[in-house]
Image (cartoon, rainbow, N blue to C red; front, side, top):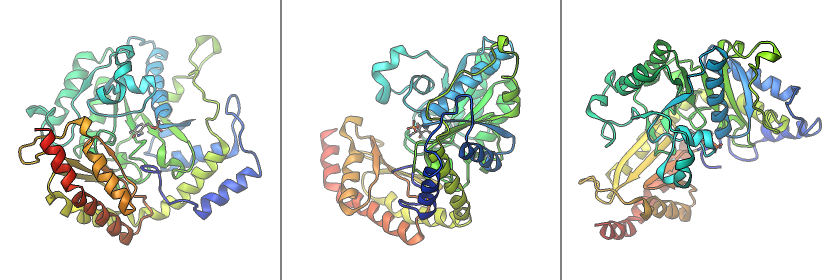
Length: 402
Ligand code: PMP
């Protein structure tokens, strides 16, 4: 359950909640009706989400949570009589899922190449990540000018743009955290240019960044918030798209006005998944107090990895860590994607007993939130050892790539 797990496996409280729900009903659709666990979960999500997010639409994966957010944003403007606003401004190297809408707002040469010609083109701008990324232009390097290219796109195209979508930390892109302050600045721009702000917290939600949601760190309320993965503690496929009351109201009207969002999935709001999610949130809240210490300890523990050969950069935010490998870090010479250098390290880690996963040349380490500081020390030690053990093979790949 890499990236998803919050409390570990076979957690008594979540298992009990699931068993109790099984004795009531396993599933009933939310097409035209509600169910008790989904109703309670919606209320609970509204309580813990950034202020002002009051409405919840359930689905079953991160990608569908994103699809729903995109469709709500576009239809919101159509319902308001502005049906020219159909584009979604996204960020290079962000990832929002593998369904068509999600691919369209974050197309990737690597992940989506057979489909690129089928995707509608949406505008994209550089992501406000590490200043030394090659795609970050000089004027984008530091706050407040990191907002520059976003503002330029909005200034020129806001008549066509329904929403901006962003990951607070690029996850699948290699654990690149946005500059602190960026979400707040983006919120102001979205208000100024009349576009919706969609924040995709499928990966960052539920404590990953040290906050319940990454938006909390900047006291930002997006118009639409996408949640998945850790929502059910990593137990079952539950996802949610949260929206503001203003958005909800734009979908009310007479049937003939056709303001309805016709988007439903058979398993949305599944009672078992919602029961697990409710138990997860109860447990999660008791983990929150201990998080800052775990985050601090983890950051200290991974520091020594930075000095190992073939390590270009160790990046982190909260309990998200990315170790980027390079053929020659000093010269900035990367491994090619096809060499899958990250796999060399993760295979070593697996041999040592640590299940982690690479994306290209980045080794990604996202320990479950429940990990104790001792667990973190043990895992960080294994990660370091795996990089050390992989050195001969990485040397060979580096020679090969010359
Ligand atoms: N958005 C983000 C930020 C993600 O990290 C992911 C999954 N890696 C998704 C969306 C898609 O989620 P799912 O795999 O549940 O469709």
